[in-house]
Image 1 (tube, rainbow, N blue to C red):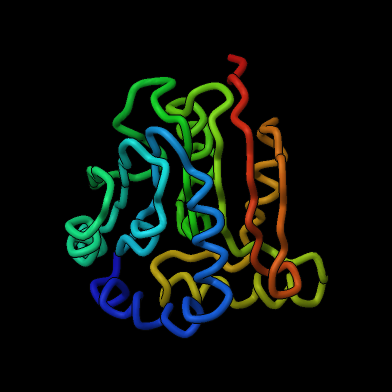
Image 2: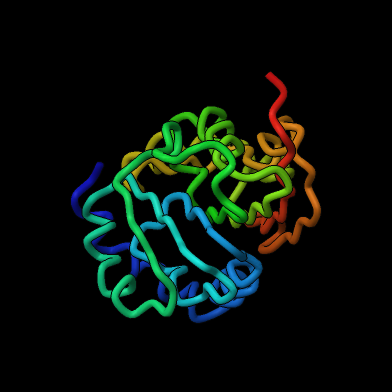
Length: 200
């Protein structure tokens, strides 16, 4: 993973966080409860928004991102344990978490199908899953532009796929989608999902 991307992440996000992104993150993350798993916690940008949480376990595969998150861990009002781990192989037992949070991370996961299966495994049946992601757009010309830009974008932005269909992934997983909010003409979605037991 790139050494420079963690250094600029918070700076690059500031213009967005000052506007609607801040409100979207806050309203979504505040819905988490109990023991929570955050997938791809990055620099800990969500940590101040957790409220009704007994413990947060935060995974992040990039150690440099984790280093930048240390001040937010120290300032948090809830217990936070961080792990250097990818979403495709989670270091937790089955049925551990009451809630799962993933914000602007599924675009970067190398195998999102495997990651979602692992998330479902460690989440309790009926657990609340909260996603905020940018997705492949419905408008054909814009979707084509996203696909055209993705190879270069992945190199610049730590593996980010502009054209990833995260909503389609969730729909195909047989999860119960409770609510979808669309922002910026459908480029960004917040999605609330109810976990269902996996049938083997």
